[in-house]
Image (cartoon, rainbow, N blue to C red; front, side, top):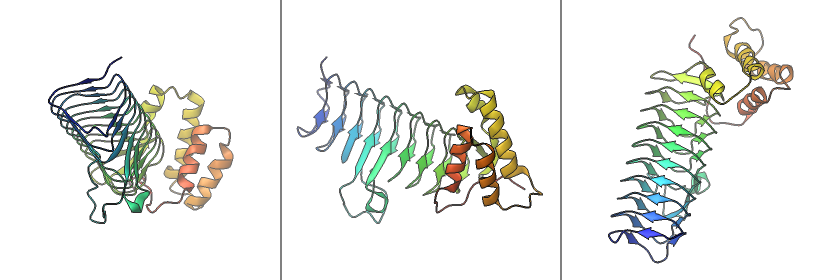
Length: 266
């Protein structure tokens, strides 16, 4: 295995480039960058800052990784962008490192797809197998759990959490936390049910899906419920204690957050 670097690429001698990396025409790689084996930078890619890219990533033309955060509070502190393995990062996507206010790290998992012109801001944490469609954007400090899908032109407000297997419809403005398995849509995003299609595609069994349906109905569709939302969460925790999906939902709802939750329209 050999590393292939195009003669027009500008690579710092301090950068750490693993074996079997391919760096195409007019790419620029700065001092503190690490690139894992099998990763390919197609052309015109800029990798700056303390950026670590794992193995077997495909990074397409005009992507910018690791440039300083777009945050006026950033004062030059050393921060990192860490990208996992086997991700596809398409044209014009931008990803910024962290800031002191968010732990100094932006982290991307494995097997993700970032379509054209996505933006991942400072201090975001993205799990494995996440898809962001064209022009989807994340503000700072956003957390996205595994297998979530962010539709095209959707925008996610800072500090929002998006749960595992959630689906965000295209052109949605997401200002509140999104429950795991939730289906979100609307100019001002609201909860429109469960992402049943996504659950089936991820091989959730029928009993697990039915349990999630029942838990969802008890939480969000019982308009005459005398109990508070918190009491209903505790109730489904006990009632569905043998269902992993429902327990993950409960854990998400009980975590401390600066946001409220996306709820169904009344």
